[in-house]
Length: 168
Ligand SMILES: [Zn+2]
Image 1: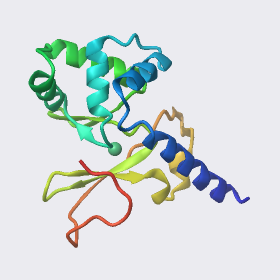
Image 2: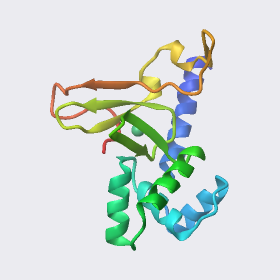
Image 3: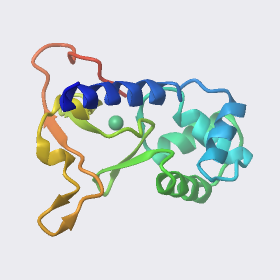
Image 4: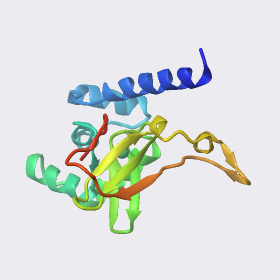
């Protein structure tokens, strides 16, 4: 198989595997946290369970609001500390658009984003849809590349975003 086809297949497998993460039971979430080397306290399970309901980009405030409504009083510090740990262990990805717009992404595969300037919605764009070999390089000049995320800002020309993108 050509390299490109192999890569595309690989992307599909990763995407499928990643999708399996959604709608997990709390017991499965606990197992997943353990696999990532995180001790699954009840609050960590609640937070991960909420984020993993679907592919989404969610702020710490939204998570805190949900937990306090549905679960029990959880301190802001607990939520922030848990999210920091989750980012470190790749349970979620952190998206920093600006200092007051930070989101937590339940899709941990390599992907890019489209920000709809009319609605403020964020959509996932699979990495394979932006075919630029530079994006796969592990080194650029004297930079050892950890990750490349592209943020496309714009407006939709029709009412819906074409393709299989995750929105939140
Ligand atoms: Zn995303």
